[in-house]
Length: 398
Image 1 (cartoon, rainbow, N blue to C red):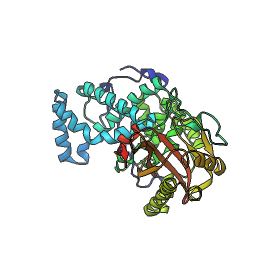
Image 2 (tube, helix red, strand yellow):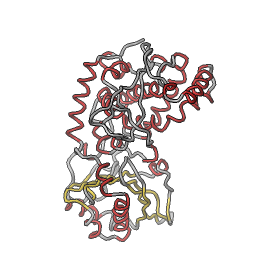
Image 3 (tube, rainbow, N blue to C red):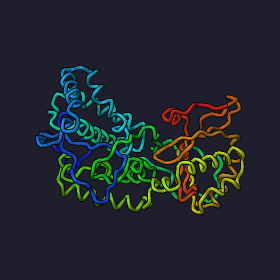
Image 4 (tube, rainbow, N blue to C red):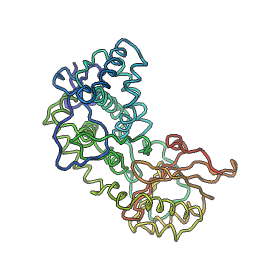
């Protein structure tokens, strides 16, 4: 088996069959509570004899799975589909965390499942298929990281603008971070070592911070903090040393801590409650639809930010954001309509802008809100009708 020396991303594109499973770590982390994150994954290596199997948890389900595994190894693609379909959503979310783009996550998952199909005959089955697939998916993501680089938000490109920039044009040479629909998240519990709940791990600030990490550090942090692997297990997965993994984790944690507000959105949203969150989102939508600047400003914090990828300019502070809002969306964009759209574990809306030629409100942007208390501290408007299909939103409204 080829080694990945120093976690070289360029050598991570090994066949899925070269990876075998290890058990996700046991024991409850004192800082961990029961949280809704991804499943407990494993790595496929030749040294997997002592791993926990699905039969330890559900013998009947495991027996059915073993039958499908045998059929899939013999080339039965329907059996392979039955094996991987229940895991598709959680694997896709993992790929999004790694890559910051739902489109890239599509590519990575497709590649990973192809690798898994081709390498399934060499999967010995002494550990969880789910964990083996996580390893394969992570390696597929590392290949994409090596070739496509990191994704950005406008705040990564330069300072904020103090006044509205009229006629702002999209930057097409930047790989932009994209939104992720909450419908793509599962409610399965995390491994016992996970520190992040699943929705925390797709929040915009967290995913954006991950983009500042090299691929190996990104993978280490997600495998350890989100999926609950131990450093030793990650070392086995990535064919490196525990010392290298611990070093990568230390560097990754420092970068993320510098870029992510200590309190995630999830405690804030739980404290406010769903009903009040809906009222805040409805208030924002109503203010834009009525062209009511005062109502909009009343919802914002003093240090609010507003960015609009793929537009490069962004705004920070109530004065700058108000100037932009009054001069652009509230007055020069025509009328608006909105539909709720949960994104990245945060409240959001699909925004529809009036189009005279179509005589309808056409899909314009998916806006994701960051709340502090009961006010909006950040608005990220992901412009582009292509986002709406993934969120299950219509292309137009009356």
